[in-house]
Length: 216
Image (cartoon, rainbow, N blue to C red; front, side, top):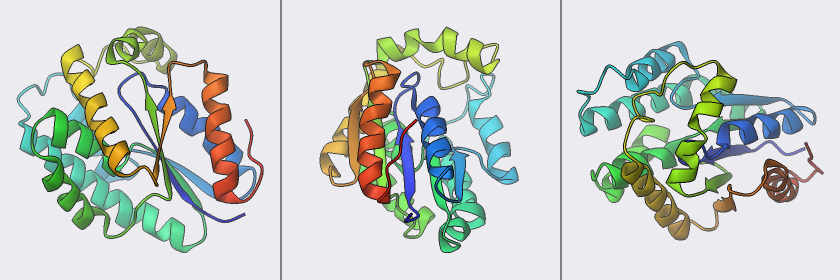
């Protein structure tokens, strides 16, 4: 099996974390594979994650937020992703560079072009072979929050989850703008459909990418 770098994107509650886990399980059954998340994945990046998602840190400015995400990403790329790919391991990541374009570039208003340029510096050419955007309306995604937090053992919404529905709809808009621009890499999947149907679409696409039949 060919090794690949696959990422999953979407608004809060889109189901990307669950789908990423299922994909990693299927890929790992065929060859060496890592499952990562952003922000996180290294000791440094996990510390940054705790700061970024802390609901008490409402004072974090938009530019500070962007730079913290980029710092976390840079560490993950250099410490984990680049070496793994060089060793012939596949990488499945729950969020990556596109999240900054949608959240900070578009929804925070910092500018998509600026964030794409900073991303290019941050990842140093380590770009996903395929990205799945799990798309659904913000209201539906946010409505899934309580059940998702209960499943994951999380007591309260994090700093970003506490943003308004309008903000999250703006994030969705940013993702869709990006997908239209990079339709060769980004596959938009209707995440309002049942999980089994979402996984079927993803696995059929990835089977062609990896050159082996993948299934849940």
